[in-house]
Image 1 (cartoon, rainbow, N blue to C red):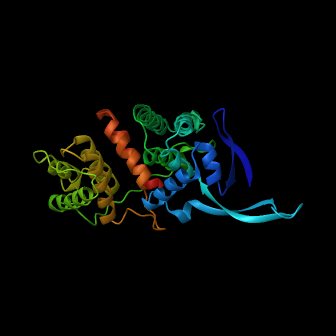
Image 2: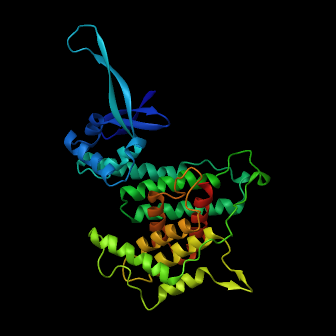
Image 3: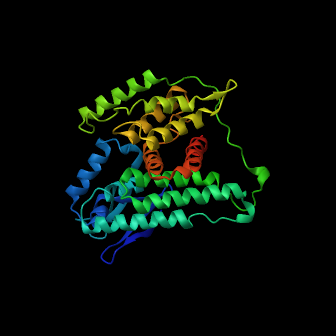
Length: 331
């Protein structure tokens, strides 16, 4: 266990514990970091767990802390103090309203951009040229989205998820050669075909749930002149009895792209695209890893949806490859 400075704005120089490859702060330290009283920090932490943004047992830990005994001179006492990992710290940082909270968000976005641009040392002589170009295009696409959009907590975490899980399938370490690269093995056996009626029924259920929570209006999911039906037909096109989009991973990626980028609905295209993407993967039994976790979590999916929405039409191919590689890399 060791301490490092994680944030400094002229007023605060805070040290955090490193344990299990992540950073940990207790509530008192977060009070100092964000310049707000404990009740505010506690409220945000409760809401983070209440809204199922994070699972409490996965992001909290009790660490033994030794202090001077209050009543007996020269005697120490040990007590367990609850600490929260970096996921919680970032979530609180994007929720809290204070001058230091704003400075933290500026700092966090700056670090994220630097990580995107400098986080991987690439030896171009050891990379396949195509892979290098794909990596550079993806980094540029994510960087552009970060600069053009005020990120939410989920989107910020999602970009980190994309970088950590996806980029390593391209950023090859020195000493690798072309023979050591693994080809992406995609799933061609279709177990479920998403037809128009079932998709519309699923969208109606989503709309009903969102309206109940006050997160959608009657315009949500209203189709524009049968455009969505065309989106579904596109992913199942065939020639000579052979699917033009052969794999389930590619079909799901194209479905996500068509719905978000094509705007076939009056409202809710990003949410509907993400919802149908997950439904398609789930019905075809390729949504989860062998340990039961989703291959693409909510944070990464929210960020991918943002990338699709902000991308140029000529970036479609790199978007599709991004989604497919995310599904592959998660295995």
